[in-house]
Image (cartoon, rainbow, N blue to C red; front, side, top):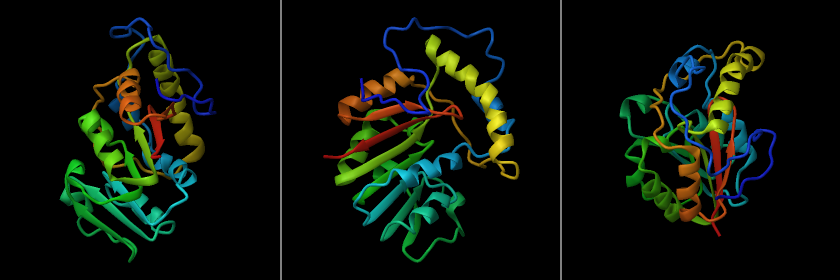
Length: 226
């Protein structure tokens, strides 16, 4: 298991051996239905966490799955250069970024730029997990950091309890923090892997990986390359 530290956003521990559960009778809405019923971007919500978790070395940052480039623009004030990559050329067409940043269309696994920071926001579950993590680990400079916001499929009792809590908290967060916000136009595919499976593979590829449950049906991964 990866390193799992206490954190205000980590209220329920990830446990092995919990009995798998089938469809739960109390689960009234899917991820997509729960997300679409709120007026805030669950991805943009975590940009603050990214900016608070930057590595010491800040020469180049790479945002894989950059979408409309909002995080790229924020990172540009913290790094010498920033690159945003998205597989959909339409979403980045015409997007303006600072002079020290650039956007281009490419598959994430085809990118060959080395970086001090690599970010993925709701992207990892679209990719083959092990190959994607190995690629990120290879691209990071020594001392570099990987920051990822992901989604996982609920499987056991702890997962379902956490999901139920998110269903309740989701509209409250939007009401209290994002009154005038609008949801992200990006489509979010349903995740196929559980948090336990992500943790197992991630810990093999990135020893010392930290994984935490978060609000908004999300979890975060953080890893610093030795």
